[in-house]
Image (cartoon, rainbow, N blue to C red; front, side, top):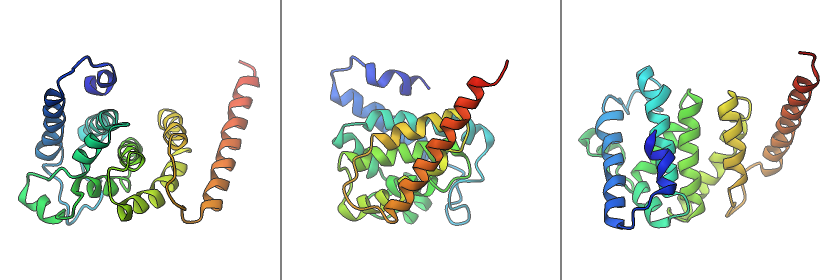
Length: 202
């Protein structure tokens, strides 16, 4: 997606224009991407159309992550964005409705969607855009999800460690030693495969 690729290099000096772009992205997500989401019967948006979960939603999530990276005000703006749909609004009446949606998307069965949601949550966590209770919830959830993504497709497998490596933990993670043991095992496994593929005859 163009926004994902160019946001970090934008020459826009007008914060109002940047905010309008961000609002347009959020509005598009709520009014179009999530328009058919039955939040009561489809917890993690697993029943989305292939055209949505394969390209559209991951691109939007990665673009949002690029927008809020290292910017507390933007990250908080995204975390607190209110859904326009009355039904979705009724389901997410908490202080951080978009954060709640992102938490649901970490349970999505499609790895790119899960990865995009985790990346957004990671930046919200890192810049302190949410409250302490929400930060702890993100902290305990994101690392195990990222570890599981180490075994996914090559694109996901390459991006997940980068997100994990950029995190600064504010508090203890549940089962901290077990999680990092998993990371070490998966890294060793990945390195062995990489070494074997390079040494195998072509």
